[in-house]
Image (tube, rainbow over all chains, first blue to last red):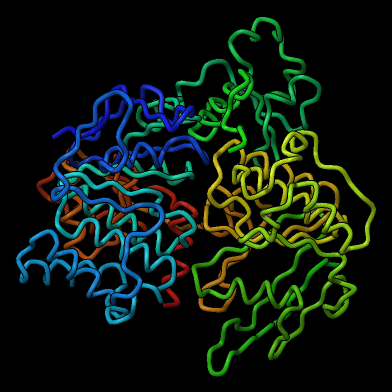
Amino acid sequence: MNWGVSELTVTFGDTVALDRVSLNAPSGRVTGVVGGDGAGKTTLLRCLAGVVKPAAGEVRSPPRERMGYLSAKSGTYPDLSVEENLSFSAQAYGMPTAEARVRTEELLQRTGLAYARARLAGQLSGGMRQKLGVVRAMLHRPELLVLDEPTTGIDPVSRADLWWLIARAAAEGAAVVLTTAYLDEAERASWLLALDDGQTLAQGTPEDIASSVKGTIHRADQRPTADVATRSWRRAATWRIWTPPATEAMTMPAPDPAQWELVRPDLTDAVTVAALAREAAGHGGRRPA
Amino acid sequence: MPLAEAAAVTRRFDDVVAVDRADLTVAPGEVVGLLGANGAGKTTLIRLLLGLLLPTTGSVRLFGTAPSRETRRRLGYVPQGLGLYEDLTPRENLAFAQHAFGVERRVLADDLRRFDDTPVGRLPLGVQRRVAFEQALAHRPDLLVLDEPTSGVGPLARARLWETIRDAADDGRGVLVTTHYMDEAQECDRLVVMADGRVVAEGSVAAIVGAARAVVVVTEQWQRAFERLERAGMAVALVGRALRVPGAHLTDVAAALSGISADIRESAASLEERFLQLSRSTQ
């Protein structure tokens, strides 16, 4: 199956939260949605999960009983134990008891949650609670698994367990759609949609997005000055400088070719450039709420 | 002389050893990244360095002396929760902090001034984090301690925050940063990795990754391959359209995948993979 959205527009009052966004989410693929605070990631996932009604466009998602959804706020009952959370879910989805027990046990063991099975979800660490939330969302083998920021603020060891669950769900044939604010993590998805301020910045494999940069990117050892400073940013001990296509002709030859080295953009460069371009155009996710 | 120095520091809570003979230094002008899973001891070590906790054994020196009220004045700290007053504007937050430290008024950075009249609680998270940085830097501290400084912000906002961090280091300040993200770790001059209360690795990214390897599998039938490697008891991860098995032998992976057409090769481990190995080997 190919779930997803087409030409999706969502408005909240006068604010356009999503503007004609399209995304396919085929079975067995991990599809990532990236973007900063307020980009529209959560709204897109809430549409897929059927909790937000779009103003226009199409949402293709399975009926609720064949979908798993973990919201960014909470995905567990704090007053129930780990096991009770899962058996409650299994019952809600009508899973046969024996099958639910075997699957619960396997997923708890593999993610290091088994020893905490009797603990209340509200008393778990952030990483363990998040693992429980993902196990709960995928327990009934949903066809579409929607996870909103499953790893934000989670330590790398728990995050590795979370990514194992995500890969496992995809290996079982689920279409997985997840959001993240981190681009190193986004590279683990095989398809990405980059959003900014409700609009599509880029879409494709991480490599596609990296090579979609318009203009050129240089690396410099010295901080760029004057007008160049506004289209540069720092990466570790060096600076990146973006030259948009329109100004390429004007800045040629480069101010000091000996100090500027042309680089092949990576995913982080590409998404940063896209955000810079929108900022330069006068609208870039910086509006007061 | 280092700005901060922990020497063979141990801290016990009842019979739990939270920090176990840890060494750590931060020199002027350097950005040191502190990595560790939850429970590895990072937060306790930071609290020891800030002088909020006393070591059970070992010594902590800040600016060459024991942590005190005086050393607090030379320290800027941004906690995970940011420590801002949400109902005050950025300018009011800054004025309040400057008053507390008894330093002269400093104005907000140019690009923050347009948020002057908005209560902090209503600003985008990236802007809130910038304000928290400005506040921590307001009294020109010699040492800056940042706990997960960019959690939850987008790439451009993160790049801008890192610009502020690197500028502070260029200006001669020392910076200690905790992070869960390897991209961010690579922005640091030096890394200190903790696991189970101990410092288990230290140095540049290259030094920490060292000779660690991973086996990379690319195949159309990744789902079958994933199941096979799982069943063979290997720690397999899905990264883009490839499967990665850190620390495995090429021949074992090939044996587990017999009958599946796949491109199997070895590559250097990533920092994250090496970090996971270090963290798990102590559990």
